[in-house]
Length: 148
Image 1: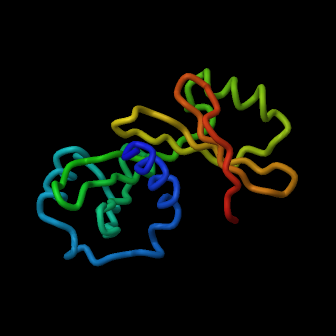
Image 2 (image 1 turned 90 degrees about the horizontal axis):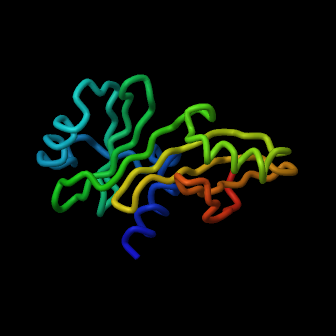
């Protein structure tokens, strides 16, 4: 259940963290220490405090990344990284092209957490936006109507 909750939280938070922007002084020292250890060389770091999670949004090796840290323990719980379509695993690209060939691909998000790696692909179908959660082996796990 916690894994499902974390996956959903990542999907909901990505792209909307600025609405909950917090002050960097609200971020625990342990979270900052763990962040600096895990993401050496990160730049343009912005912090958000979401209660159970403290989120860093930053640039790491030319990628926009969001890292989710447990507010109590300071431990890294998961990451979300925007990727280009051609950076997706071949199985994910094949699934998307096979089942959704006539759709307009918008973006892709790679989610890594204790449950493993999955992808959220955003696409437009008949003027409606959808998020498709796809496992690393290409299985479509769910289709969710997205907000514009």
